[in-house]
Length: 555
Image 1 (cartoon, helix red, strand yellow):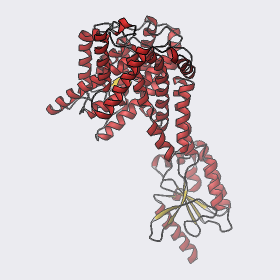
Image 2 (spheres, rainbow, N blue to C red; image 1 turned 90 degrees about the horizontal axis):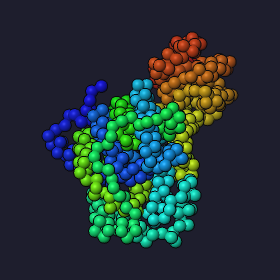
Image 3 (tube, rainbow, N blue to C red; image 1 turned 90 degrees about the vertical axis):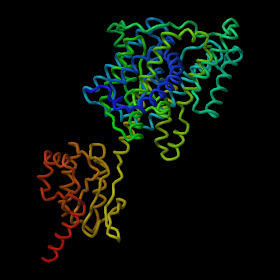
Image 4 (cartoon, rainbow, N blue to C red; image 1 turned 180 degrees about the horizontal axis):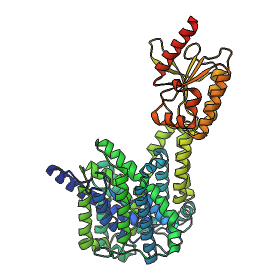
């Protein structure tokens, strides 16, 4: 596999643009990953570790020129939910389990590459992904309220936690509440007045400066404290077979989200810049990045839509930008971690809260509601499940909801009767009793692949079209939308052939693609209807019918 697909080629002018974009990525990414570490229940410095070696590994091994890989709010929330109750957050055991979860997720990604399972990314529909990320945003935002108010954080589920936090509001610490409000005002003001300024960086740096100058820690405001300086220690996280069994579920959940979110982001930016990328090569990069996270004391990493958008808008056009960001993080770890100590916990919680709020896609949900109410219901159920039941359960429901939504479309396909317009062009007419392309002929287009679940709908349509006083001489099944015929559907085709024969109607087929025709050959359908029953197009079937009818009339 060639290396540096996401970097090369790069022009001299492109180097400068990528370096500038990488600096902008570091300016936003560093404050964000501190927050993501907090979401994951990990020591804050491990957030920096996620954009040190893992980001560089993906830049070298991946194919996408744009995808930014690092800590992510969705996978951080899944990790925290999966490790809850297994170890105390932030403890050495917790860090080891987080590393093992990243290792397992990385192994699953690499195995998916070996099996060429990149297509699995499509099993989370855009609708369900919007609902899932909205639910994650609500869940994470609620989880930060206690630290924003300076009150004790309660355990339990998201909704009980919200109720308990609101009950503590009368006892909120004034300093923490004021710091949170100041951070929100600064963030919102910058987003509206200077949207290109990295609001998270300004909030964090400003809070550190004010905290240091006013010695807020001495006044009782909780601060971050010492952050270890230097490079992470390399090593395999300690684990036991019991640990592996305990983390398989959460690792599989993160695997699904990484696969779906990273692929969707890579696909979107490749399309924007009219470039190509290889999902299977990206699986290697993502898998190796998570293995690197596990070996450097970090936690699971994912393709980030927000950071990818930031780097792209700053002019980044290759993974050289991400290598630049990794270089900046290296300098921070070696020289500047001490400057993070005065950061108020309330401000860090507020940054996480505001990041989470941005995940709540109100506009996306509203657009879905406006055009596809049934899909809005699916997205809403997914979001509610994430908030009320948990992130892992939400992932499972999201996958199931996507598959059910797909089955719903194929179960009741939009089929039609083809007929010629007055101008001689094909038009699609509704399937109605006695519908005809022209007297004696039905050209019926089935709107999906034929499989066991929709054969009843197929049979109902055939019955409605042929069970009339005026019999059809030919019934043409137009297969333009049929990409597969399973064994059950083949059996139904035999039944349809026999039914039509009993009514004096000939079954023919048009627009078959070669693999489907090969399937029908194997099933024996071709032998039953005759090889001369296949036509390349509906137009050819129409001409053949007219010729046959003309011969019959002559006789």
